Picture 1 (cartoon, rainbow, N blue to C red):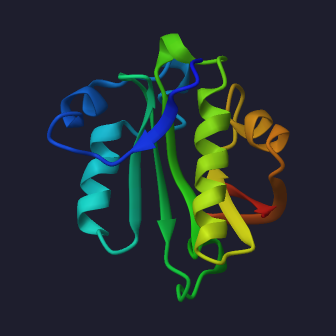
Picture 2 (tube, rainbow, N blue to C red):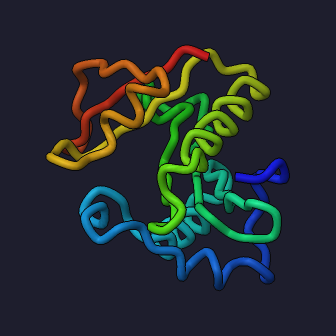
Amino acid sequence: MSSTLRLAEITPENVDAARRLRVRPDQERFVDPVVISLAEAYAYGDVAWPRVVLDGDQLVGFVMAGFDPAHVVEPYRNYLWRLNIAADRQGQGYGSFAVEAVCAEARRRGQEKLWVSWQPGEGGPEPFYTRLGFRVTGEVIDGETVAERRL
């Protein structure tokens, strides 16, 4: 991981690389592909905050948050919506960097909590998120385990 790690907006120059990004095959049941996220970002343009994760000029991941402070469902007010790290780039700190960057954006927006949810199951992302300080709330939305992190 280089010192030029950053998030960047989706642009015509990086959208093709973003949509080609693939997680490990065993993770595909836990996270939608980036192309689905891009469609959701388009449909929810006023709420979605999609970004690519870059290490120098190399695209290594994709993260999307949702910021809708007035949403009637509390976990949908400030949430980590999607995280995809390229299969060959996992375990190098890119996912942690992306989550921390979303937390920083939520704090910048004056928020005190960030939520995330996931499909439960063997090999799922729960250990990753709990290591980063997310606490399972006991709530389940659309079959997904909900967790929150105080910022």
